[in-house]
Image (cartoon, rainbow, N blue to C red; front, side, top):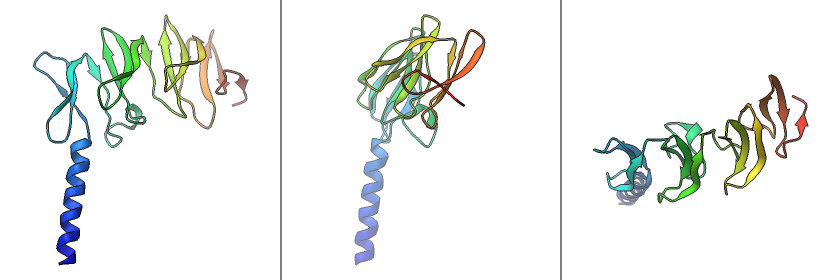
Length: 155
């Protein structure tokens, strides 16, 4: 009897978790949105392109329940309710790593935090994700490494 109860409980938990996973779908309007595991539309199809909430499908797009979205050639991030937690205003975005995301605006790259606060002013020709407290950046043909404050550091 305990085994049957345990199996039933596991099935219910799996079903509940599955219903919370959001996956992209393409609507009849050729735009993208997100549905839950039961097929219910959670975020309407209004974006030109989207990333994925599921860490199993594309880890680069996943960060604390945020997914990358594109609308009218601009990028931002939405949460699992559809709220734009990072406004769709950037020319390009990287992925959040170590709490920061490289963003491109007006042809230059800088970094924002998860609250869309500019942490490092956009001034780089290219910016990579942070790893172990450092990020590789390119400026005026030179490759450098910076810390989370934008200060140049050793590789």
